[in-house]
Image (tube, rainbow, N blue to C red; front, side, top):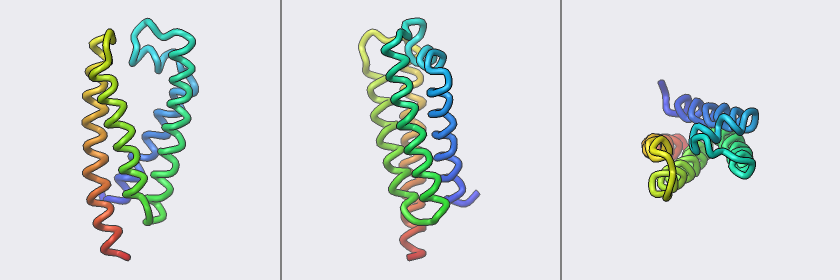
Amino acid sequence: MDLRRQAIYMGRSRVLVGLSMLADPGRSARVWAGSDAGASTRMWTRMTGIREVAIGVGSATAAAQGTGGADWLSMEAVCDLADGAIALFARSVPRRTRLLGLVVIGYGLAELALARRLGDAENEIS
């Protein structure tokens, strides 16, 4: 699969995650926070869902157009690396939150690697 298509799929998957966070914030919040997903946690889940949709649409669109996809993908990576680190090092969170933090960090590193390869490919074309 070519680099642009990979970036498009990463962006689209982020949109799906964001939409699921908006559609059912309680369930999405429980995945991260366990049974302690109160009203404020659901509110933050919705806010994060909006961010996921916006970044995913921007990333997929830029990758499809062939310009700026690497920049958007690197922004995705920064969000995921920060989210993962926060989940990993937060106090008093369930073990699953830390494990999900590791998964998100891994995904962020994959996004960074793809962003670099895509950026190199975009620069060669220009």
